[in-house]
Image (cartoon, rainbow, N blue to C red; front, side, top):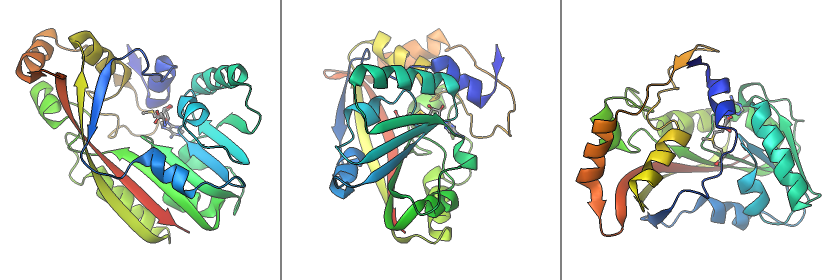
Length: 254
Ligand SMILES: C[S@@+](CC[C@H](N)C(=O)[O-])C[C@H]1O[C@@H](n2cnc3c(N)ncnc32)[C@H](O)[C@@H]1O
């Protein structure tokens, strides 16, 4: 079935990974959630871009004055509002917004966070207060590289310039100061092949959405069973099925 990027995410609707059993080993000491905690005070106003169903904001973000979570998928925001109702939290709001056309007020937020989503740093710069922080975690070109090479498809497989560098330069060009780009080397171990399969179904690791033009349609290729089995056979370890992740962090101040 053909779909565009917006509908692709809407069909995933619930971004929870709680039913996937995996362990994480970090090889760098820069942890996105810790960076947020480090910079938040009880008076902070935070904007979380591409918030999906709001799990991170509801469960992991520290107490503060105000959090706005946004996503361009109405289904994600509906799911986030249901999660919000269950949580009983009063300082959090969710709304539909496209990260490419932000309509939040100028000089309003103390912190803007964006985890695994697209950003326009100049628009983020405008909505931050002077002295405010931008904290990004992204998925880099070499993420799951051996898996993507085996399938000969996937996110960023054909990018000439790594997305981390594209983002880093856009943050610098937007006028931010003290911009840091941190490569994040992580290994994940999936308990069973069903856990790994569930991850591949829930995420665009094997889908290259980055080359889609505005609203262009995309047809998801079913996961080829023989290639999947080959990857599993070659990557079984005592800790589980190994998947090498390459993320990046960016932190910058207005
Ligand atoms: C990979 S998920 C990440 C979700 C969440 N931030 C997390 O870390 O678990 C990407 C999210 O970004 C949203 N998204 C993608 N492109 C967007 C855009 N142009 N504007 C707003 N949200 C977008 C998707 O709907 C999806 O919920």
